[in-house]
Length: 197
Image 1: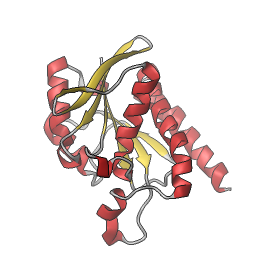
Image 2: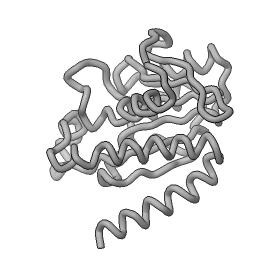
Image 3: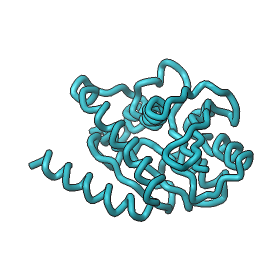
Image 4: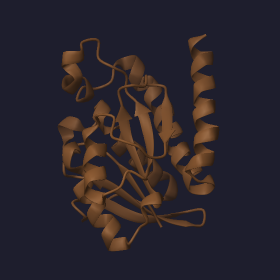
């Protein structure tokens, strides 16, 4: 079984903010596999589904970003899910909006949600789908930036970005993180270069 967690903050005021691209991606995956994320448990909202031959647990922690690890720890322990079967989708300021990058393990790079997960599950050996949300012009406005909504132009790009994030999750499930990284990160790089050019 895979545990797929999308990070974000609960509540209407955060619904369509940059920090919540993880929630948006989980909702898209749920829609595509025909389930709704309505069950309450593990300090979050969740549901079980199936993709290809794999059972998947979709989770949206409701703990606020900084305590995301509490929810993942509870879900992982209940279903006895191996760390290498965890996929976390989160916002990434070091990437522009149209970029998605897969990562296998490593530190939190300053992301408080990832930091909480590493502390709670006692390992950094889980896959991450990093969804670019761009950097603020003013470095002092980081919090304001991630909690802000998208511009009109960005909102037009967002569905495609969320679909790419979904596709990368499915690629990890089917092919494993190493192969998915090799294929997806290179493809995303080329697409971005073509858009820039």
